[in-house]
Length: 475
Image (cartoon, rainbow, N blue to C red; front, side, top):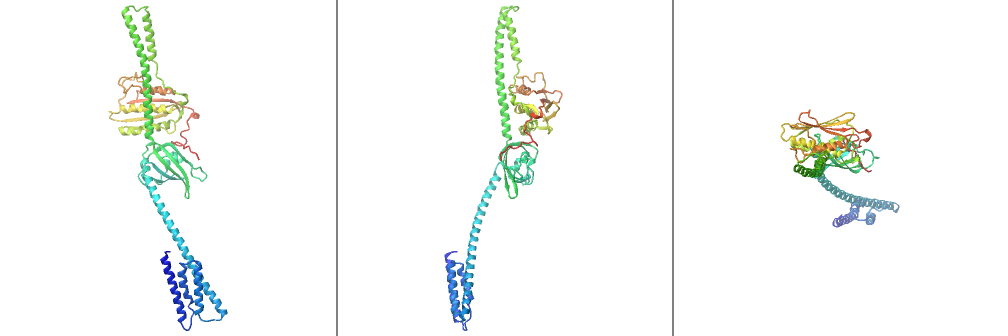
């Protein structure tokens, strides 16, 4: 309480005590006006400490005894005692009420300050979440979305405000398998890379950073999701370009040796022309040896060096998912419709995941170039399986291939760059005991990749329950 206001109350209490004493003194016959001292006692009880309240109560009791009607001592002492108790209790009661009120006011001010600070922090956090380019979501133990920012709606193709209440299993299946429902479950603070799907059905590679926590309402999961498809596309295309560049260097070295042999043949040929005798001539015999050497060098195939540890039983469905992530944006920009016919259950196949993806990407890019001037633009990717092999057929609506006699030979006339794409693709497929062939019986252009089926025990544990990736986390 401000000092000025306290002084005013003390002055008012003093005037009231004086007024009650004068009233008690002047009234005749004498009456008991001691109860009027309760007013000033209440005033000083809100200002003074306890000892001053008791002193004021003693003074008022004395004034009440002096100016009150005279009674025998046996009656006046108990009466004075009761008056003192009443006045002191009233003053102390006012003192406690005032102190409690002051504490509550302090608490209220502190709470209001904390609420204001919390509101400011919440507003800043809200702005940070909504303005973040990263998709941010919170989910319940049932994998239902509690909150999603604008970036999350945009990433998954969901209209604004409609993500709440939807199951995250529909969009990021791997998050639906994170065990965080019970109190005994471990707490996760980790990241993973898995398959994501938009509301339109388009798939993408997702980098997910998530954590689990407990609240009074139950377990919760918070996740940050980033589209990593662009990085995957750049990585795969860069790998293909590096591979083709290295292959061109190797083929160039072989061509250099062939040119040397051809030069030697030309020299010997000139010698034979000048001599005019061909039979039983040593130069002629040397020419035969050089021709044989040239034939042997020209027949050597460029084989892809493959370490045995790289070839394993892989999940073809996952590899085609990665191809779909890389392929669909480019085809959509080029106006090409892509039709997929892939069974969900496929046996594991013998292959190197990276090399197989490069082969598929090369075939698709050849189809894209062939469809530049086509009226109908579509690419069909179909997969079928039997007990011994899995066939991946890539067909387009282009004009087809005129001559197929030297289709898989390098340095084709009219081919873009060095014409090594199909030559290397077949070498890759054969390196893991498969085959790449052209099917002339199908309209347009159709290539078939035949992959050997691997045993169930050789399958990579990459797709456990659904078409996603289990997180690997540490509690």
